[in-house]
Image (tube, rainbow, N blue to C red; front, top):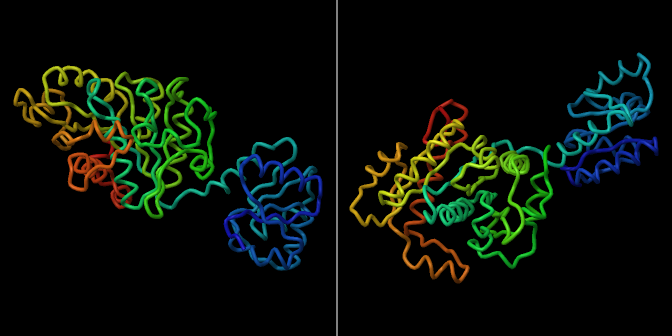
Length: 368
């Protein structure tokens, strides 16, 4: 018995056919009860119950208890007696078919994509200048979050970055990339999104990546919003690698981020470039922090870099040994105590916890 499937109790065959069609479009599997005895077994635990008018009368006659999440499909006006019975068992809405097909589709989408009780967290990483290492750090942060047991959605927002699938080492894996991921607006079920994407697993946790490709367009603003929202709804840690020029799609990610991290090499030219990026990011209200990456050829201290950029310091790290060699092999595996692991840990620890959100406490990752 699958308790995640909506329960359907209907004898009106044309309406049942429509329910099955819209459930298939939403990617939602249904359990159909042939009679009230079978319906009783699923009545309390199904995420959604779909009835026709005749089923309402039969459920009331069988004295099934009142419960939330009941919708009724109907093609005709119902008499007052129907409404009295509908209220008795907890019917929340009567969906008039075919006029209100969108409401039926939305109900099935909600049931297929039940929100996690713990909202996901979103972090956006940007480079202060070209070659700052934000993309590599985004992948390292995603790997660390997955290693901690969290499902992770890694989102590539830079169409000129070559593709995060290359950094993750899954470029040969099947799965959709942005040019073939046709989402425009609305919502997409997180489970369906994960299953369509390449990625890795670490124990029971999965890391899925929405990567740009070697050619073709990157994400539009609406597509970025849909994907990030899907990850947050599912309770994932969402890690976004964004371009330095704050595009419309980057703004969509920043608008949803709990924390933005600006990766700045420890040199004067990087400080000057990063200040402009910081000014553009701050316009969108996200709490922004600097992560300073060594080496410092001129001896600039991390605190001086943060001061020059005008953004609070989150952490300072040394360069990762043998990083270029690892990237050439397509095998980024941050060392347990290496600089990338230290940086990723600092970023994840700065994100607000569920307790922080509940108590309204501010952390390095919360908004003002």
